[in-house]
Amino acid sequence: MPGKVGFRVRALWPRPDQALLDAFGPAASAQVADCMSRLGAMDAGIRPIWRSPRIVGSALTVWCHSGDNLMLHKAISLAVPGDIVVMNTQGNLVNAGFGELLATSAVKMGVRGVIMDGMVRDADALEALGLPVYARGLCPNGCNKDGAGEVGAIIACGGVAVRPGDVIIADRDGVTVVPLDDAAEVARLAMEKIESEHKRLLEIGKGVLTRPEIDESLRKLKVIE
Image (cartoon, rainbow, N blue to C red; front, side, top):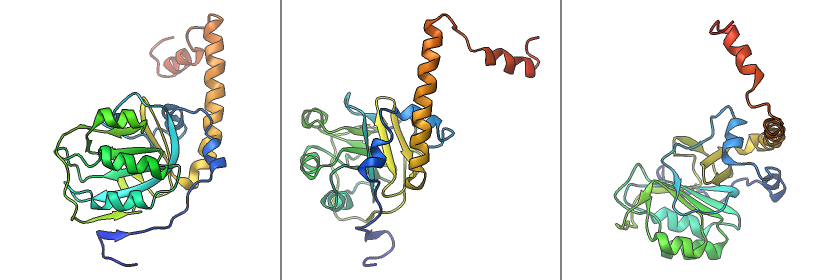
């Protein structure tokens, strides 16, 4: 592979097809996380910059040196429609790695959303473009474009490992990552979860306001008789 460790670009990796993405139906990030024993949800610091719609897509991973976004520019040039850019900034909170200009290019490339473990800027423009963006916050400082980084690597984002091609589900609650190898099974479980929650809502509507298994658990713990 051209380049060297910490400074290289991988251009090809497996992506989920549209049928697999569609298999997640309307499942929320929370429902999907529950189906993965709560192991796939990014931490609460990764939040939507504006009240954007739910998105589901394939991870395009970027790993940039702190204060630099050279590899993000390259990653966007490799995006295919439906990709969700997921970026590690080495914990940088004083430089915005993404803003209006990159967002405009990303939209034209068909990028479905951007998840940034760091800061972004140009919030009004991001909303006007209709591009869902998740980040730790806003910062007016820009980035250099000459530092190390990798495209298509396994990265950390919001405390979760993200591989290129993993399924990303992001909504107002946050972001959940599903490993591509597990995606079909998790999608099936998510549909079962939706049906289970629907049944529970019907029970509540009929007056069954508390779950009987709660008392059963408390009896086993000898909290109640």
